[in-house]
Amino acid sequence: RLDQVQRRGGHAGSTIVAEHFIIGLLPESGMTWIIFAALLAGLVRGFSGFGTAMVFLPIASQYLTPFEAIASLAIMEFFGTFAVMRKSWSDADKIDLKRLVLGMSIVTPFALLLLAKFDSVFYRYSVSLLSLLLLVLIGLGVRYKGKLNPLIIFSVGGLGGLTGGLTGIPGPPVILLYVASSHPISVIRANNLLFLYFFDVCVVLIFALTGILTLKIFLLGLILAVPNFLGNFIGAKLFDPNKTNQYRIVAYIIIAVAAITGFPFWDTTVD
Image (cartoon, rainbow, N blue to C red; front, top):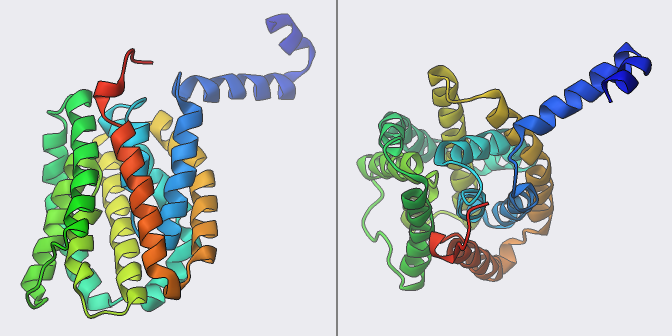
C-alpha cells in the first residue's frame, strides 16, 4: 500500500495519510450512535430551547470518557448552534442572562475539578439520574414560586455551573427557575439557549487553558457540529409558539429514552 501511495504522487499520498490520521483520532466504536445523538440533541434543542446535553451525554458517554464527552459536546454546540443564536439574542432578557452567566462562570471551574475524581460508571449514572430527575420535578409541578431577584438568578446560574461541571448538564436549574417565570415563552427559550451556549464557551476556554482540549476532542466536536447544526436548524424551523406543550412532551420523551438507555446496568460488554 505504501508503494501504491508513493506512485500516486505527493498530493494524493498526503491526502491518504491525512485521512488515516483523522480516522485514527476518532472513537474506535460507537461513532454512528454518537453522530445520531448529536443530530437528535440538536433537533430537541432547536424546537424546545434545551435538552442537548440530556440527550447527547447519556448516549455518547457509553463510548467516551467523561471529559471527552463534555468537551466534544461543548465544541459541537459552540459551532453547531449558530442556526438559532441570532434570534435568541434579540429575544433574550439581557439582564437576567448576565447574572446567570456570571454565576455559572464562577462555579464551573471548581465543578470540573471535582469531575476529575469520578470514574466513567459513576459519571454515567449521574448523567442519567440528573436527566430523569429534571423530568420528574417538572412532571410533579415543582418550581420556584418566589420573586426572581438578582441574587436568586445569580445563584441559579452558579447551580447550573455546578451541575454542568460535574455532569455536563447545566440546564436543569435554569429550566426549573423559568418554568414559573412571567416571561414570554420566546424569552425563556432564548435565555435557556444562550445560557447553555455561554456554558459551552466557558468549558472550551477552561479545557483549552488546562490542556484537556486535545486534537482528538476538537476534531470530534467539529465533526459532530455538522449533524448538530442540522438538527438545530430543523428544530428551529419546526418551532411554533402555539404548540409549546406538544414540543415539550416530545422533548421529555426523547430525554427520558436517552437517559434510561444510558444507564451502565444495560451493558453486557463495554465496546
